[in-house]
Image (cartoon, rainbow, N blue to C red; front, side):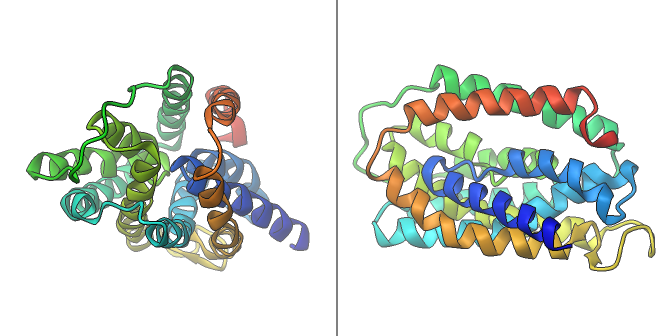
Length: 269
């Protein structure tokens, strides 16, 4: 168990840095790694993807809080935009998690793999390009509708939505570092709604090992969250100091490998 905790802590540290640096949160990395690790904890292979999604999202709650707090202190969270996005992401996250609990693990895995490839392509192409910075915070009901889509997809692939929220805001003229900060705040709402859906609509009692709450495997979620909370501020500081282009391309290559692993049947599901 000590080795498992070490692996969970290391994964959480990586997720925390990515949350602060890129607004992505490392959720896809967490899900792929957990699909491999959880069967060793007694999670049935047929449920490994569901538990990986739920556990990653539960850990992202604290990761997002830490990252959002750090960005807020630097003035890079557009709270009016958050207020318009949050209603949509809450509803979308809840509904997406309910849909996921009814889908076969193999189908979920294929969807996550496809999303890995799409996210990698978006990072490599650096799309969309930044517009001239707008002086106001984007707002309006259209952002609530977009939030619904972002929340639902995030729940299905186990992320905080940064790979969708950040490009949307950049396309609307928000400076990238402020888009990352705003995305971190929205990611908290996505993770809360999604994790709650997974926790409250779990499998039959006894289907998962002790320490599970619905589909959330609490020992892993706690370890991931503890490490990510400590490292998210580091990612935030890096986001304000360096260009992330080289790191984006490296992460894109890694995401492509993660997608290939999942498409090939990684984790035995």
